[in-house]
Length: 419
Image (tube, rainbow, N blue to C red):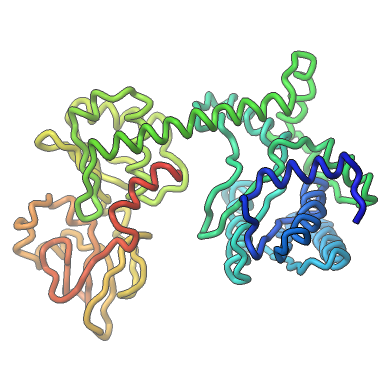
């Protein structure tokens, strides 16, 4: 396939943002819009050159007229390019809640599930420098800090799949020039002109800021600078955690005096990292709630944040799971309970795993021997059969059962760098 100098340059820029060695099976999400169609075309050539098998998927949210036809158009293009393609349909919206957020979460869930089913190690997404710039503008409006202004990362893990964004340094205009040069068509989403959406307002504002030199390219570079600052802060937070933190049965224990001596940005990051690791949060708690909890720690008072209890005692602050956050979670032995615990033991008909709680603690008279507070043990996993506690390993009643964090304690410190 003959490529002009411009197309070769574009392909080289995309290649530079991909892993040094391309995965043997690489996925690409293609909506049918110009950005993702250009990405599909560019990756088709790269994959062929490097012996990688390329797969494409289109998520059809089914939320507007014409979406099915657009997905079918992508299927025809993929067939022309000899790329296996699948349409993933979302049928999960019940008409309530934040539609855009639910659709975004559904899109990533569908794509990563599809990737895992096809043994695809990484999926490329078509977000551009313009998308990055619009994200920066929207986050400025929310008084975002370093992490918020870092905007979208070039890559991240989601559901065991690497998501990569190789177009973040490339503008929409360049991609459309490439498509015209290649004679490829694309679909225009009518919602891209709907000023009810914040992103479209940001797009309009960005056009007006260009005379000041505030362009998609400059804001994308701001995001890149902020990402470097974020990475440095995350590394500092991890190193701080190794000095001040120890893990006890899935709880995080922090030296209080050391914590209070930290710069506020590091203490805040450490607090959010702890709470999200224990509580499984996808997003950080609201800034006001975080600040309230920091004040509570400073005053040596207990608190609750993100489904976690914050319990100061004896110069140490213990972060543990809050019972109310897990009281309704039920799993079978051997399955993951509360996103992190796996409870195994003798095969027992009718046994389930759920939180120990006050009712269960009454059946474990020696729980005090563990040295862990009552409130802490209430939120730990126990094996139940009906109303009887068969085992509560973290409360000192193992009865031949084990409670494990499969990833181990070290996973906490790695978590601080990856979220």
